[in-house]
Length: 322
Ligand code: ADP
Ligand code: MG
Image (tube, rainbow, N blue to C red; front, top):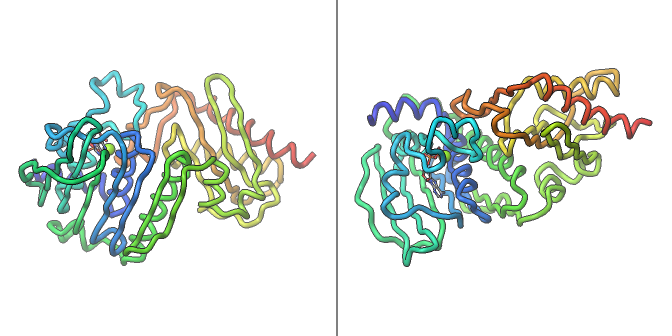
């Protein structure tokens, strides 16, 4: 099973940033309103995520590190309506199989916290610990036991950049949650709970927000909100394209195409559009279980999605050109 976990880890935990993503998603699924991330050496030495979410009961700590054990869905049919960011139950098990992992947690009912340590996939007994209600997951020495994988890690700076990008993508979608990011002990991001507009300004820059058009449309069970750069905004790069489906950052061909078209229709020439857009739809209308890291999704009615995105953005852009 340890080997199976390590093989699975290759898909889910490609690099420190992918472990960080799994950990942040767990904190949000647990209802945290405050999340703190500590990195050392770009996440290779340490990734620690502390939250004030619902926590894990002592008797469930070992289960949380078990492959395919998830508390989030109870049956296959629920998979079609999944409302949480995680649902496969392989995030923590995968990370634990290729690191030294400590999981400390306390529910609101517990008098004190409990912790469990997993080293090289082996679980140590649960012990009492000190922690406020919530959870800390500490991942040390990623890939220490799989040197072939470790070889593929890039420089500290590169791995740090990936971690920061992952943090920023998630923080952008949850402005109501307070986030802190520290790297090698230095605060990089201190984001209070704030409005979406303020969060976008904090992460993407005031310049972007000032040049952006707010957008909020709804039709046929689809809702789109966020900001698109005005047609004359010239600083856009591929990096400034943030698209989310039900709170999840995704790369989606349908969306990219529709948004590009919407800009081209107004501008009559090609340019990288810049946007931070949040699409919400019934979970049954989108399959998120098509990619190990869930960065890709499949829409049930992609034609309708395309039209909706095109028209929403096109209308917003056209209004400023009139
Ligand atoms: P999944 O998120 O797909 O359920 P994970 O392996 O990421 O699987 O996590 C396993 C389980 O551990 C979760 O279902 C959840 O019950 C628990 N868990 C993990 N992280 C946290 C956290 N930060 N707060 C509360 N529970 C957590
Ligand atoms: Mg998870």
